[in-house]
View 1 (cartoon, one colour):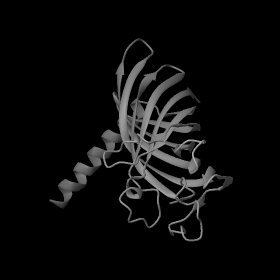
View 2 (view 1 turned 120 degrees about the vertical axis):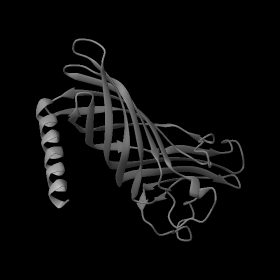
View 3 (view 1 turned 180 degrees about the vertical axis):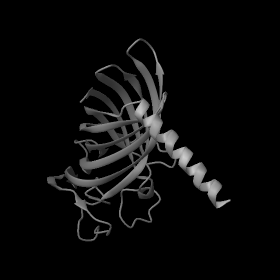
Length: 232
């Protein structure tokens, strides 16, 4: 029985090596525009938040495991966040916050490819991602009892709730957990030298630290992105 397992694993490994040699690995440099938001409802809705336009740039590998299947790991510098607002500037009490966190993100997608011409392929895929926050700004314009103020500072990456020390923590997202994770979806067209795709990032990690608030627990990243890449 043990010898059968060894033989089976050896044959599987040989098939995998043969598949990788049959289809040469490749790499792309990629960049594009992000339309980011933060969910505020149980169903993932972001009705009361506004999209924030940002960008992403990085590298993606393509490791074929079959003629129509590839594993695509990547590493990207990417922006997320959203705009939030309550009231209007003419009200006695008003705030507007813009939160722009920046991450190093590592996605790994399983991608199916179908030929659509001599040198082009349509592809669709999905997979997980993990990300680490590295920079970002939180800007707040607010008015309390008619008195206007402005605050702009670096995002505080922390798992500790510091709302008592920071009176503006609830006016936007000035304190965020450093690590994010979630799921990706991607679809597009790959040519001989270039690639174009539309992507969706569905965050699963809540952003607020140590929160037991039913609204804060629903704060998760949502990112739609458009990408152009070129083969290296």
